[in-house]
Length: 354
Image (cartoon, rainbow, N blue to C red; front, top):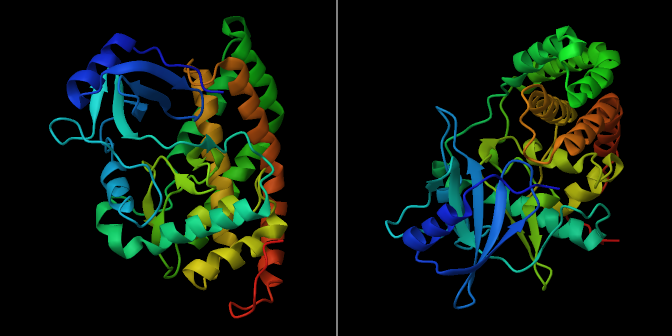
């Protein structure tokens, strides 16, 4: 669970008052998410707003890059929270080393802690993913990133593995020592996974492919379900133009959606979007890239003592989960391949959600 950031609350309240005209009566931390921090601000008049904090962007990054896109999507294309402008019609402010965005508050519950979703919810998610991809022609000009199949984290991960292995045990923190004991027997497997990812990258980069708007992180933490059952999709800073597989892989074998049901999900996605032909190797590229990129990030946070997000114990648990997932990826690819090969329905046949 996310821990509250070390931010000056008085300074944050002052920004909400002076920049957005919010006379805040209550500011409540929302302990969800992994790369940002969230609050609900309740104004004196009872109105609410969602306040999102992110670390100030590194040089070359595009701060608040998802905001214009969200504003466009909110006009009937995809259900998203509408960004709220400040007094200068801007959408981004800075407080205490954090970028501040203010968004429309959506009454509902995050799906982050739900791991067994009913079929009707999965069907709604499939329709939501289809709506995202179908919006491409309307919003592509607002998306500054395209999928280049880059792997910038690989040298960092490789270097961190070497550093972890070479560090003197006498200088270790307890968390680093625990990390070393977890990584030491897996270093060969991690390097093999990095090599496999490079192979799949070569496949992904060949040929012409359908490209759509991709959210790139459609999972429970970024989904809000309202009382009427409708879904809204949060956090668009990772959006890019890329192959549909970049979003679809999340439903091809995860803790919340098994690989053998990928065809079931695609049936419902295609009913709204139209036919697609996912490539199992491209899905495999995203399976491996997500696993290794997340591993690089969490291992790096331990090595550099940057564990403010969820604390040392929880960070170690995340690393353990990623290491446990790694040897299962090839089986996941095989199951997806079999699921795709076994699809025998057509779009003209009736579908049931059972």
